[in-house]
Length: 76
Image 1 (cartoon, helix red, strand yellow):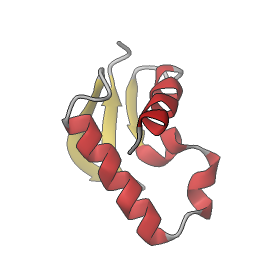
Image 2 (cartoon, rainbow, N blue to C red):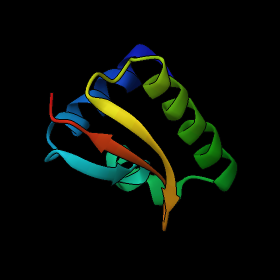
Image 3 (cartoon, rainbow, N blue to C red):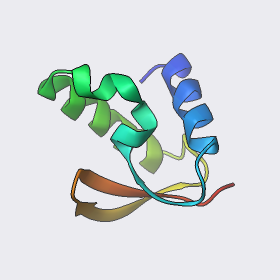
Image 4 (tube, rainbow, N blue to C red):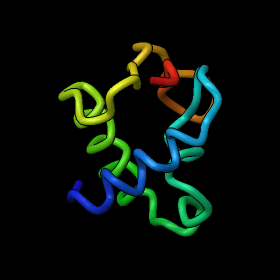
């Protein structure tokens, strides 16, 4: 995940209300046009970036539900 993509995703997350979300909501409308392998790769990169602290205020809840892994935006 490059610097521009991290910045784009941070901007999208900051527009959310605090609470739980799935990564496709953050990625945006292009998500459904991606191949499954690309979705897995990008989703994994986001999880690793969250765990590395590159998205302050975002937590991995450690749960999966419906559309995949659940994250929490603390609104910071």
